[in-house]
Figure 1 (cartoon, rainbow, N blue to C red):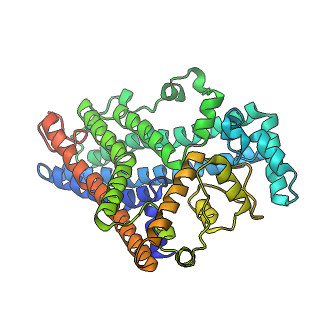
Figure 2: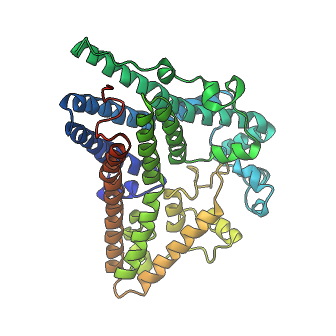
Figure 3: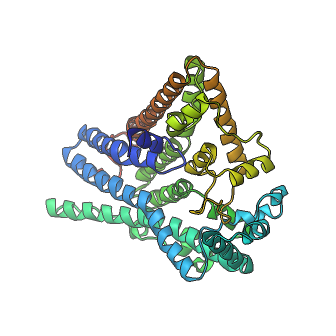
Amino acid sequence: MTVTSIISAIGNNSSIYPLLVRDCFIEAPSKILIARKENMKESREIANDATRERFIDEYVTSAIWLGGIPATEAIMDKFITKKGYNPNVNLNLFKADKTRGKKYQGIEYNIKKFGSMAQKDVQEAVTDLLKVKNNKSGFEKLLTKKFAAATIIPTAIMGFILPPLNFALTRKLRERRDKNIQQQIPASQTQCPTIQQFTGQKGGKLSFTGNLTSTIANLRTVDKMAISDGGLTVGRVSTSRNKEEGYMNAFRMTGSIILNFVTPAYIAKGLDKLAKKLFKVNVDLDPLILGNEKLIKAIQNNTVEIPKSGNAKVLFDFIDSKPESFFSQSAQKMGKVTYLKSGIRDPRKFVDLKDLRKFRNEFKSFVESAKNSGSIEKFAKKAKGVKCFNILANIGISSFLLAVALPKAQYLFNKAVTGSYLDPGLAKRK
């Protein structure tokens, strides 16, 4: 894996890679050190407990948070496959049948268009579409279960099971360390809630409409992580050892959600906008595209093929008739379109026209800017360098906010609420 590939991965705010870098390698170590330092201001003993609790909390939670959803979804995909369905069929294709997009994609349209093609993988894809078409409700129920399992199970473990276990370990160690001190936690605060309590549904059953199922089925892993983070906040607050710890957990988790899932996208936009103003370069595209030698040569030879407009028909005609073009291959690499091994577009996948149109406009803008520059090669190299810098700067800024600013603010908040820097759940009550 090249350096550019790594930077590209951590610069994709729609993926888990930026979260992985920030959470495991920057945020967790910093939070542990700050927790120890702040508690050491008043008690070495409590600082030791806080360090251990925060270490377990940060790294075990990170492992479940980052790996739990993909692992659960992989298991559920196998279950769905055994039921005779392909989990890759996108339910948005049913929506497309009812909109203007049905002229170019949709369940009925795709079955008709791709059904006459002889390629084996295309026929398999069409068969998958037919199975879903003939039992849409059954498929929707399976996807609902997949979503519920992928969000509820990791959230329950992180928010409702891990904290009480972590607290219990501290109690045991304190009892062993000093048998005269008993740290008691009300049972109502340590018991894990039932699925009925967690979901707010009687019998623990979840029920979604078709449109909602279509929406949640197409959420990205990072979106589901944001949802689980919301559930984690509820879990951490409800399992807190006292109300002051609950306040601090609410403050910390709310800040974490904002800084993990909202702030980075705005930082990226701001940095890219600033780069255009200062360096006169277009850096909307991924660095893997900006520095591609094949694209640079094509621009130099004036052989770059781009859809003539953002019209739906033009876009679909282009990606279907020219799958080997640099634009189509780049669109696939960026997740805008998916091709089968035969080179035919996967009819099970839904093409987000708005997203593809945006990519086309950014691609065209870069090509035109490069053509108008004094040296296409130098322009592309400069654009790639600036983009890579912006990505690393984004990681640096967002990591500082998460790993330093938020923990510091958390302990200042704690001091204002409790009058002490000690973790409220660890502070010994008089």
